Amino acid sequence: MQLVIDRTVPMADAAEGHRLMEAGGHVGKILLLNDESA
Image 1 (cartoon, rainbow, N blue to C red):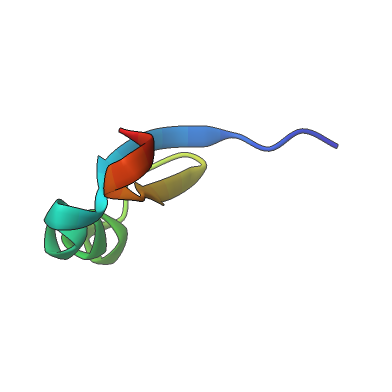
Image 2 (image 1 turned 120 degrees about the horizontal axis):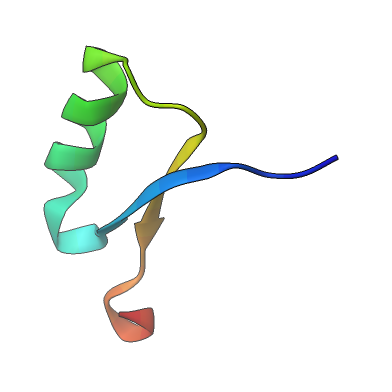
């Protein structure tokens, strides 16, 4: 089993990550990154 990551989004842009999920069209997961890990 493999995890497919479509894109990563900084936590500061969490609203954009939610918009991407709601819009659909992504293949895989959208990850929110902690500001410390960016």
